[in-house]
Length: 323
Ligand SMILES: [Zn+2]
Image (cartoon, rainbow, N blue to C red):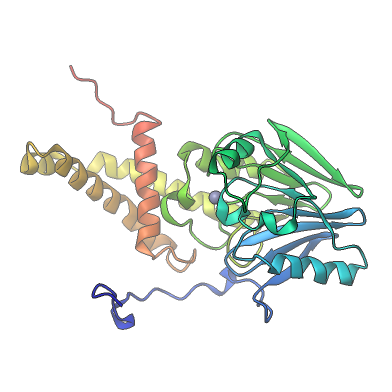
């Protein structure tokens, strides 16, 4: 314990997580595996999600989060036994290159077909992490994966959360997998789920809604999502965008720049912090108790900051050309 560690009593309280944000109970080993539809299954440890297709010709795994880790093997074994099929994982599809969704990929050996976007391959070769071998089968725009009579449509629609994040559509299972964009029932964590391309992230749920599906596998927390979850997420983000524009128009930068004078960065910091706080406050109030963790201040506030910067830098709003 360092002197800066607070006691539990000093930590803030938050409103209870809405019951609807939770998913099914985990088993003794700390995971839940459930049927999405037919032979498509999903696995969660309550925080991360993975999925797999159990076909007579082999198991196709979609992502391998290290927090689920060896429980992926247990979940596949459990389902294979119940379905009376083999438990060999023959294919692994990467949704994107991030270690928190891919860092258990090496648990399934080298004798499998790994599939991912060309940018995922490039980034994994760059990262050179033995737990995430680069995919050998890659694609640019679209790839139809066919195994054991099943079909998965992989598509790239540009950067969003990461430069390489893909859409995984299961047309014969009424399901869509899109990782790290919408957390069903919960707000995004810091900075729009730590997203690199803000306009791409904001537009991704629209792109997802263009597909026909009923079940959404978003990669996080303990339950599957619905189309209503995506609509609610879009409202939350749209409210932040509206609130950010309003705060940019209403907060007067003059006091910050006149007080700090030659310390230009102090003026910028004070002003942008004030705009961010003004923009985030009504959104936090509106969604507290609606989306879980909306009242964890760092999340809605940092997401608002990211959107504000995108409004300035991507959209060019508020830019003034020196006369
Ligand atoms: Zn990610």
